[in-house]
Length: 98
Image (tube, rainbow, N blue to C red; front, side, top):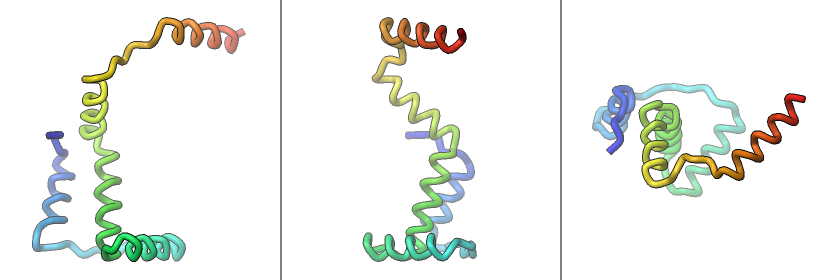
C-alpha cells in the first residue's frame, strides 16, 4: 500500500465520510459543458466528476505517490541504459556541442 500524504488522507476521509464539504468553483462554460456531458455519458453526478478529477489531480501531484509508482516500476524493470543506446546518445551530444 502506498503511503498517503496527510492531505490525501484528509481528502479521502472527506470524500467518503457522511459529512461532505461543499465548495464553489469557477470554471469556463466550455469546461462545465464538457463535465456535464461526461457525467451523463458515464452515468454519475456532476459532483462525482469533480471529485474524481480532484482526486486524480491530487494523487498525480503527491510526491510520495509519484515516488512509489516509480519504485514499483523499477522494482521489476532495470533502469540501466543499453550500451549501444548510451554510445548513440554520447555521439549525438558531442555533435550538438560542436
